[in-house]
Length: 99
Image (cartoon, rainbow, N blue to C red; front, side, top):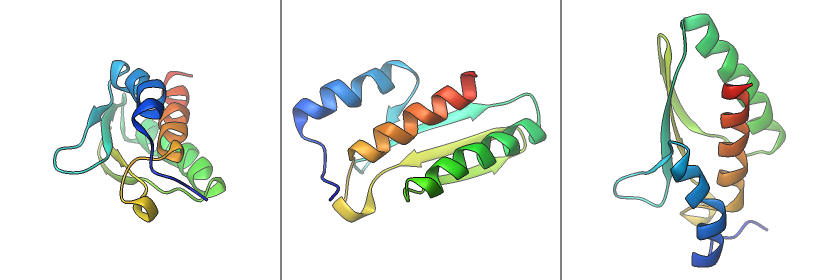
């Protein structure tokens, strides 16, 4: 069962993400990041890759795409806040973006 992150877990799981460009979402327990790509095809390709992992882990992002930009918000609706799944998916998105 998925649980909301404790304060200790937030320090170890969320703080490194904040140092890597993620930010807390205003007004809710969620993180957000905007990814910028060279063009639409690159952005769409990344979304497909990230989407495969999201589906595999049954943890789906709130996201939108405008041309070469993808805006992502991660939160776990079942626990009304951040969980380890959000940190895991954020790390995967960062890795796919950088690799």
